[in-house]
Image (tube, rainbow, N blue to C red; front, side):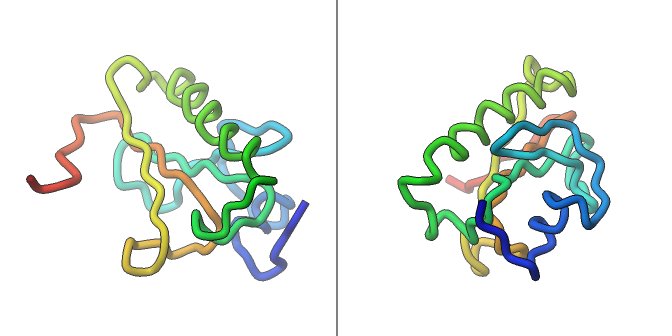
Length: 118
């Protein structure tokens, strides 16, 4: 499994940094965001280091599917599956990506406003 020794999320995967995990399997891990933007704010990451969507290769297919399966399980476990939740993936600095390890934000627990202005 690829790992970047300088990546904060790789350190969480390796158990070198603490996190409040809510889900883990062979491919992905999900944990509470340290700066939540909603009552439920979970980060779901592949265990293998992939910097962003721009780095995704065929070999990451299973882990990417694992992100969505984990999102469903986490939403159910945290009681936001029925009321609704948002999944967000930022790619690149201009999109707001601060940690360059692919991650999905799961946000819920309240009514969320529109993301895009029409």
